[in-house]
Amino acid sequence: MLRERMIPCNGREAYVTVTSYKNGTMTGYLQHPRLGEKKKLQSLSQMVLLLNDLMDLENCPHPPPLPSIRPGGNGGKGIAVFCIQILFREHYTWQGKLVWQDEKQEFVFHSVIELLQLLDEILAE
Image 1: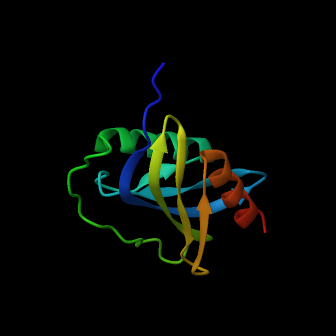
Image 2: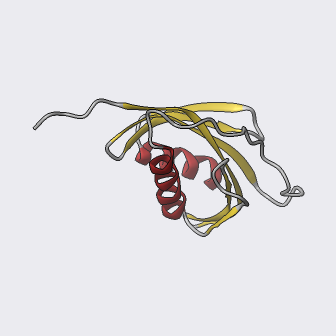
Image 3: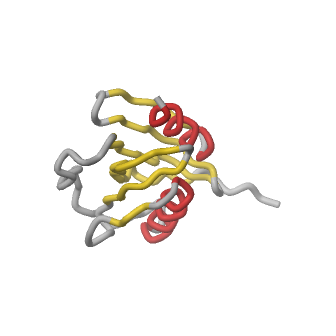
């Protein structure tokens, strides 16, 4: 079987605002240029599935140009804001950067599991 090559996703960014995090359960919302409005999130797995669907819509590796977005409108109600930059996707493995907007820190992740672990470590503190 031929192995598919890594698919660059052109650095698409999604912003996730976490409004609560307790015992590994996150709530909040996601902003992305393809979404007309903020999408409510009730779990980390919902976030992953939504991001994966958005990448499918982009038809990586040749996504059409989209307007850039910036986090906004949370009125200080969120406990954390993250920018998730998915740089490459191969099958269901993502590589990219997690930027913690509030603390101006960047973390590199090499898989979805690593992304989830980073979010859990940050939010559990």
